[in-house]
Structure formats: C-alpha cells, structure tokens
Length: 79
Image (cartoon, rainbow, N blue to C red; front, side):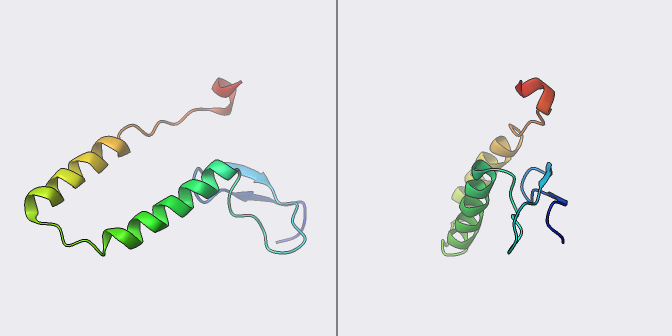
C-alpha cells in the first residue's frame, strides 16, 4: 500500500486516506480504534467466565439487544 491511497476502516467500513509512511492505519477514528480494543478485550474475557445456562442466555439476550441498536448513519446525516 503506497502513501496517499485509501483504506477501509476495520470497524465501520468507511474509507479514509492512508497518510502513514510506515504501518498503515487500520481505523478511521479514535472511536473505531477504541471500539476495536474493547471488543477484543471483551472476547478475551468472555472465554474466562464459566456461565451457567440461565446467565448465559441472559447475556446472549443483552448482546442481541445491543447489536440491534447499531445503526448505519450516513456522513451526510452527521453534518
């Protein structure tokens, strides 16, 4: 990847210019970078917990509700 090319954010999928001379950026913003860190930490810690079935189902329900709140907001709507 050369300097000045565009790349896609690994979290939101938006394209952004790659201005790095070294390792290319993977995220378009600090918010996306922070969310990626959170998701990796969450996944790592999730495997450490031995849930009983009731609480496992409760967590699945909570995660389902959170996932359904994700909305696609166009850049035009943000302005």
